[in-house]
Amino acid sequence: MTKTDLIKEWFGFASNDLYAAVHLFETMHNKPLEIICYHCQQAVEKAIKGFLIYHDVEPPYIHDLEKLRLMCEEHDASFAMLSEPCRKLTAYVLPVVIQVTWKLKKQMWHTHLKKRRRFMRYVPV
Image (cartoon, rainbow, N blue to C red; front, side):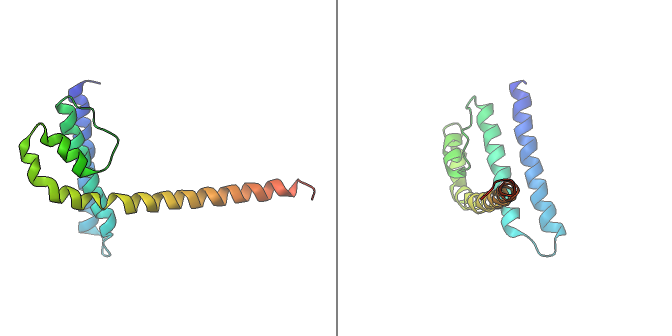
């Protein structure tokens, strides 16, 4: 994959997240604002990472928009004015990640419990 293709891919992902946020906001009656804001954060994160790749910087695997913004500011001083929006949007990543992680752990726990119950039927006590 060429650098140009990689950049386009990151900006495509960013566009998809922004589209998802707008779609949820415009179509849902009970708007899931935390999910909408999460998609907005993801759109910005992916666009920033595309920008970093354009400047030959390998983006780190982090979700902190403020840290990513500072990396961009080294290449374009106008990123300085985005500090507050980046800080605010970053706040929407952790609750969603925790919620998803908790649901996955709960599902895993139920799966392991079922396996253990099945196993215990065959173990004489």
